Image: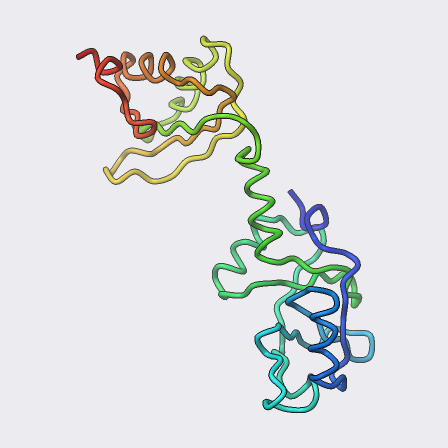
Length: 202
């Protein structure tokens, strides 16, 4: 998934010489939180609604953050998420050449991952702990396939136990009981949903 598919465009921008009071009015009018600052047609900084306090100065250049991190429209959303996480920032201007063509915010990133992982669609969450070796994804996918159920998304995370990993599935069914039972019968540990006694053969 690329930045250009999730960015907000066109983007509202301001000048470093704009007054803070006028910028506060603009933020309220547009209902936005982040404003790239453009000077001579180029990105020179950024301000957020938290920067805009009338007693902190009179113009934007007195409160803006500069220099500012930015991304290209063809960068991956995963890379943008990494930058936001690493630098603890809430938005990134999108720049092509010298032109600011959009902006990506934490909300855009969250929405894209919700859609990517299928959490916005009906279905169920399944977590299985597996040995960390090739072919384990196919084993569980085959069990799910035997029940005629589609997999919406899948990703992996580290397990607490060394040498193991957790496979996290979003699948298109509401009733996971039969699938969970078959995974347990195959010798693997289901972390979610928590197995019932009958799934464990008790």
